[in-house]
Length: 273
Image 1 (cartoon, rainbow, N blue to C red):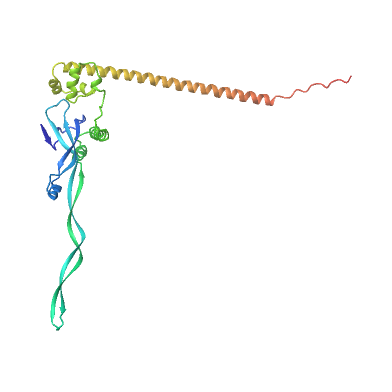
Image 2 (image 1 turned 90 degrees about the horizontal axis):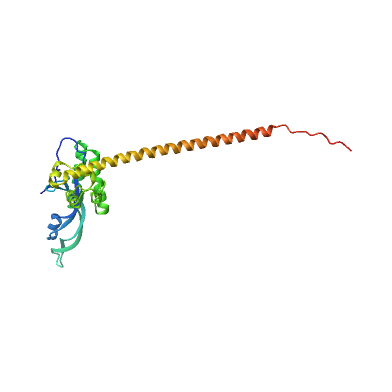
């Protein structure tokens, strides 16, 4: 089931977890051009399908980039042939009228239709952010996903790919990915509704994902602490080496001064034989 132009979540509290989104290009009917040509005309429109992760039954569709038509009144010069009755005199001196065709240019006001690009979904995100209905992270995530899709044609996996995570069965992985739960992080945060939809083994898979991430986070923290300590030791060793080098230079400088100031020894004159 799809609903056009409405957000799937209307909670008053600011949403922080972005929805599951996918994009597509569709041909939307261009009735204005169709009326001019007498045929069915279409223009490219980019749409987004929005749903909650784990919800395979309800999607909201909205327009990311569409088109609008504005009518403006513009002034144009129009040249056309006009016929004028010109009075003439015949050979007997009698007046008569003769039609004379000539070109005439006038400035007239005419309607002009201009296509404009519209961004309804982006406008709604901006408005929801302004009113505190979504967080800045939610807003930026949606824009980032669209930019990546526009550049590559595919959506990036935002986290550790579930397809490469071998701690659950291949069948259960496929089931979760089909539901839009395509990372270990999303599996760990999956809702009760998603668990029920996935069926047998889902809760155990969520528990494994949570434990895996906790262990991974602890390992990352430990590795970061070791790296930080190693960097401190390297800085301390570098400082000690510099101090020793400065000390050696100073000693050498003092020894040179002492040597330069030593009195010269005067020997006894040699006896004459």
